[in-house]
Every structure is written in C-alpha cells, then in structure tokens.
Length: 283
Image 1 (cartoon, rainbow, N blue to C red):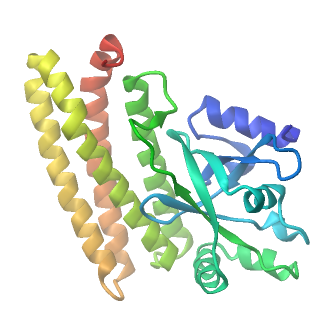
Image 2 (spheres, rainbow, N blue to C red; image 1 turned 120 degrees about the horizontal axis):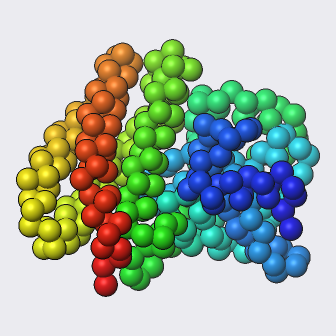
C-alpha cells in the first residue's frame, strides 16, 4: 500500500489527468507501477521525470539523497517491466538503468536544470541511478486516460499548455539560458505537437468531415493552422539546432508558438468538443 502522502497524490493525479497541487504542483510527474522485488505485488509511486525525446523518459532514483535506493528502483532492477501513467496515456515500459558514462552525462544535464540533484548526490555515498523508461510498442490504439474522444482532446490540449508553461518558467529560472535539458524539453514538445496534429489530420478530422459536412470551413481553418504551427515548430527546431543560439531568440520563438497555439487550441475546442461529446467514440 502506498503511504498516505503518495496515495493522496496518486488519487489527485488520476482524478485530474496528471494535474496535482501541493509539493508536486508545477512539476513533471508520472505514476510508476512496479512489481515488488520480494512480494511480487504491484506498487504505484509518483515520480518526477525528464523528457528525453521519442518514446523514452528519464527518472532519477535520488530518494532525497538517502543512503539506500528507493523501493521503486530496487523493484525495477528485479523486474524491469513497469506501467507508466502520464495523465494522458497509460502504457507499458521497459526500465533500463543507464550505464555509468551515459548516466553521468544525463545526470549532469539534470543538475544543470535543477542543482538540487547535485545536493542529493553530495549527501550519499551511492551513485544515484538514472533510469530510462522506454515505451513498449503495442498493437492497436494507445490506452487513453479519458472516457471519450472529447475528453481526450481536452486533456491533450491541457497537457501541451502545461508543458509550454513549464518551459517558459524554466527559461525564467535559468535567466533565459539554453541548457542541454531545456533543449531536450523544447524538442520533445515539438515532436509531441507534430504527432498530435498528424493524428488529427489522418483520423479525427476525416471522421468529423464525413459526419458533419457543415464543419468544412472550421476543419479547413484548423488544417491551415496546423501548417502554420508546423512552420513555427520547424523554426524553433532550427534555432535550437544552432550551436550557441542567443537565448532570447529561443524564448521569443517559444512565446510566439505559445500565443498561436493557444488561439488554435481554443478555437478547436470551441468547434469540435461539442460535436465529439454528442457522437461519443467512433467504432
């Protein structure tokens, strides 16, 4: 059984699609369910994470600098298969403990983003492990943490809003510098938005166009907005790819993307969510 603090976070996380308050407010958080090394029973733990692009996220087994590894890490060593809930999807992941050279590189990236990790390492003699959680491919559609397409769309939009807010806050905390982890965060966001809009263009929009011909003008506008956002994402990638980009340029690009994306998301919600609520889930 989770301790009372963890249980409260777990319940709030699941009730609010990844949004929590209190100690974890404003943090990137996931729920990690591991198999007990001794008991064989499932254990769910809220864990902070870092994006790492593609189908992988990183978690750090700091235990606040305690002398022993956290239980969830020992469980993953015994059984590397785990379940991850990110607020939008639930998926199976394979845990890979990073080897020392890669661990050191990634841990330095994390310290650059948050010096607290170095403080935890200084408190303990153990080398704090870094674990990559790699999504296991599955057949069929992903498991959505939503009861309908309408709810899923809203939750996805809110997740992008939160991530953009986090990135802007990270710029503010670092004096608008572009550290290695902040680069990864921006590029992961770019890929996520690209995937989301590609999925809408191939699936959701044709589904609605077939059932609601009157929606053609709105869908046409949304398609054009997708193209515009794709241009902004490519510009952001280009600025980040510069060897030593002027940080203000990157932040300006993020702010521009945020403004246009927010307008797009709001319009899409106004036009599509009422219809999606009415039609439910397509067969």
